[in-house]
Amino acid sequence: MSELRPYPKPSYPQRIKTAVHYLLPQLAVTRAAGWLADRRWGVLTTLAVKTFAACYKIDLAEAEKSRAGDYASFNEFFIRTLKPGARPIDANPDTLCLPADGRVSEAGAIENGRLIQAKGHSFTTLELLAGDETLAAQFSDGLFLTTYLSPRDYHRVHMPCAATLRRMVYVPGELYSVNPFLARHIPNLFARNERLICVFDTAFGSMVQILVGATVTASISTTWAGIINPPRPQTVLQWLYPAEGADAVKLEKGQEMGAFRLGSTVINLFPHNSIRLADTLRPGTQTRMGGLLGERIQAV
Image (cartoon, rainbow, N blue to C red; front, side, top):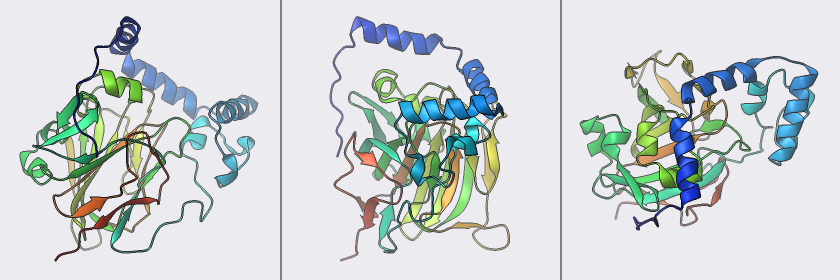
């Protein structure tokens, strides 16, 4: 698992590259990207999808729509669905599955309420959870997994286990890119960016799954509430959900729960002594939705 280690002083080119991102008009760029990605330009859209897929080596054969011309807009391509069985889900009720395709950014123990962002950088659960002390306390000595979705990855996010949604919190914030370079150079990146916090009841205890916004991530959506942003209000918004009844939101292991319009980051939080993360979850490790995330810690 990860440990906080000093990070070498960035070079001059690295400082310049980071400064450019600080100065970038994030919201304007993101709005423009969202508008362009929603346009239906026929042959031009098909050409853009073909070019993007070739540049990023995307395997369209595993998608339900396997031809570039099947996508009316770039956004349809971003949130493409996969063919049934493309991501097998382990049915074992004592294991959890990975929520997304991507790469492990960091994973491990939350120590004294702090999560590793990258070598030399950490942030607190309290910051990440928008100052909610009660919620943060539930995970102060727990475990976390941060998964980075690159532009080439499948952009839908799924459930690690069967769960009941209890709260959803939209937190306004910055729209910095969340690529590995900036994760190493912008302090508190994930706790500063716009994000959607989803709190679930599960057989493993309370679980949080956070969808983090980023530059040109034009929107985040959920299967129960649709597109959450835009609009982008400048205040924290919260929705509460019942545990039972017609308005309860219950999701099965491996079921889709949300999507990004272009890649971003998913952060999972688990309480202390509830699960054991898979040994394979090291920084840089490729993840495939449905693969092993961890297993229940059996009571002695």
